[in-house]
Image (cartoon, rainbow, N blue to C red; front, side, top):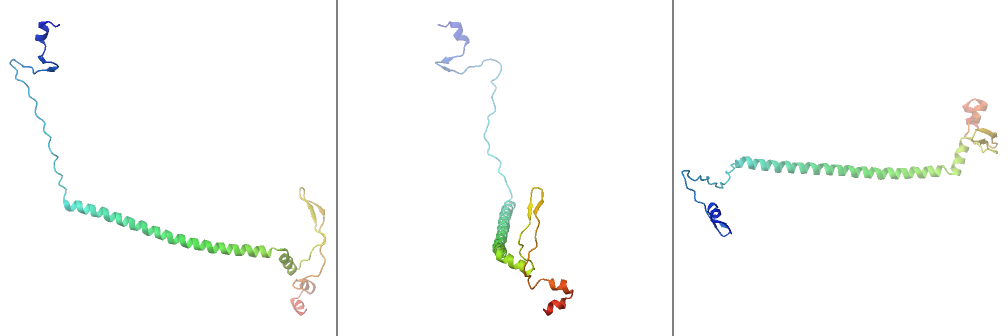
Length: 165
């Protein structure tokens, strides 16, 4: 147990709760200033300025959306025109490829060569490709020439002689 001196020097307690301490002497107890929760000062923005700012923001947004939609539609029309042009060019390319295929056939090549006055060679030349040696020299072809060749010009030297034939 505790001694009597120890309890007198300590603060008065009631169970586990401390009781108030009485201060005696010449110094008055210091009191703290009380703190109060004050409401915030009202913000007084001019209503006309605020309304004008909100209207300006909305107008800028609407104009921006209209500009974006206009540009999008313009690009859409341009894209459509380019797609149509691509389709036209694809069809033209297919037609040209078909013409090349038809004109590069053996019959057409032979006919074109005959119109130019060429005749088929009896024995074509043979060239050894690694070093370029000619194994068999070319022999000129023999045969009837086409009527459109310019042999008549070389023989007579005048174009009127070819026209008389």
